[in-house]
Length: 358
Length: 253
Image 1 (cartoon, each protein chain N blue to C red):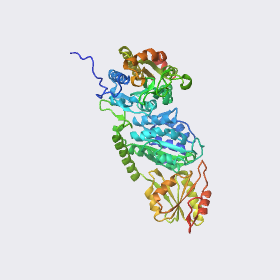
Image 2: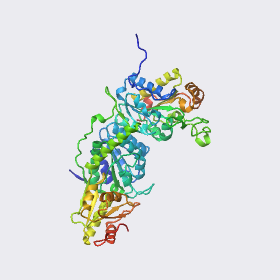
Image 3: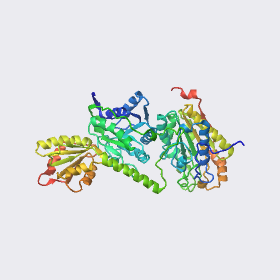
Image 4: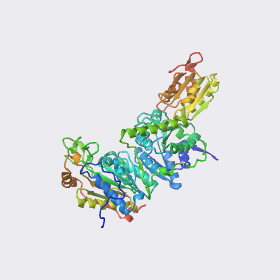
């Protein structure tokens, strides 16, 4: 196992190749352009590799649909504005139960916004994003190592549950360089029978999301819902950092969680026993895990690079059992650990607990 | 006794849901006949559109994957790139190809994707109830052009076959119609040539078919057939628009 120093976007692309991804379609958008560039080169080298620079984001996702149906491990990547236009296809994939990995290297929004790191796409990612009753598995890496590991895991999860999986990171994760060790991928376990490759001499297949009979579509919806409930039971992931003796828990994911770790060190130096709860699976959200903390810790501060989205999931999980404050920097602003530590110190004392907002 | 006519093997026994006089059922049958003739049922993969023909998989007994409105050529691109030895086609209407899916269709053609597009041009949005299509004729009254299509307000009918013929990536493009037995036989030949073009690896092929929609045209089936002859054919002239030999197509490889 060799350790290599790599830029985050390239880590995702290399991890995808090693996980057996053999089809990529995408459209240029900052801050993730190194992903299509790297895929263009690597898919040329590997057997059966196909790279298509599509005419649009919407074309890319529908190419991925075709490739996924035809049996290739498939991926597309983009950033906020591009992810918005991919939603049509993501909804289709959920309906048709097709696996694929979609990477969102978030930038500032709404609209064109800017190209700085942001976390404003949490709602879009975790609530389905497109039309209809569906969920998407969403993983939020916080280091280059996790970009590698979670990208590989994303392909396995997509296959296991026959559903699109999103990697939700941001421009910071994509641009920074860190040492990475690529793990050995699991062999692909996707049933041959699900692959559409022509009927041969046998029975043909139809892949569709159109179900005109309301009772039949209702049953399809409940079937998908049962699958999502299974995922919610089995696939939550989180990291607990210095929570054992904590009096105050910061809740943050991705880049924000890295900033929080820096802040926790400073807070502890100042005598405040802070810890971190970091959701890694953003959907399913690790509800039980954060609720367990709330049974013994009274103060939580949710920190996001947004105006406050994940904080709703934290409130739903904790259900009033603890005080929850929120601190956000939207619009592509990346605060320093010192700034976050200062915010906590201003808003928290042992007598009053945390104030809910500034 | 010699059997001279039967249901194609690549067709199911389902009864068409299409209106009386509609062209879709004729074209479905032609596709099935050609698939049988070429012996490609086992390697054919179809991509039906949104619209009346969304249920094409109820009639064509081959592997099929639905596409969202207009995205057929993108989905077909994904399938074909992964499985280059399969015969992959999309089936698209005029709104699908020339409005919401213009980009996907144009760029699949421009990339010279080795797929076949069956393009039904009936100058109207059928399934949604007869709204103006990008191919509606100037002056044509529809539910969204009640005073008739006006060039200044609504633009001009889009001549897909002529436009796509200009793209170097396209190999075979023909416009035909299905309003008489002779025209139907000609269309059958065109579909066969288009699939053969793909099998020979020559690149993008498209067959545009002027097709009656009596319900939304508010005409009898017979009048609809006549309207194709007298009006549609003037706007959309029939014929082979492009037929590039294999050698020339592959130059610059």
